[in-house]
Length: 114
Length: 114
Image (cartoon, each protein chain N blue to C red):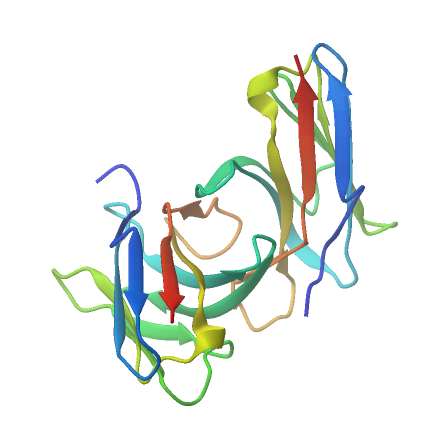
């Protein structure tokens, strides 16, 4: 597709439940990035992929968070046993190549943990 | 940690006026990108400026980059009410590790009054 598609737009989970977010990058883009935006301003890098391979996972919390980009499937970000502090908007972005190319963002998934 | 710091945090101007937002960063970069975020929406890519470039234009947008001062500015000329949004700078750090992750500032909230 011509835009990064994220689903669902909104997700509400009770504390302790699992949350799974999906991202379809722009066709032909090799890199996928996940960011977390808390409180409408601060963005935190979580993880990036080069095709199906994890490229940089330095921002991923060690526990509870995992992500995948499998061939012919949307990428996914999964949070096990959600906590209140996981409430945020999660953005996916894709870029054609890694360096010095524009990163295009999806509309985000708003996760609310209650 | 946040690399870029936008200044001012909030800016309110009349329609037709120019708006200037600044961004400072701390370490060497490969490129700097400016994004716009309308309330509750995703990030829209505005301009990418590479570390060896000093100025770029796109329509009513002008971006400058001063690597010696580690700063960038975004100028929006002849502002419109539709320009009301938050504006973020994001840097692709020249860490040598080829991470390609973007480090965002906290944004400038621009209000254009009709």
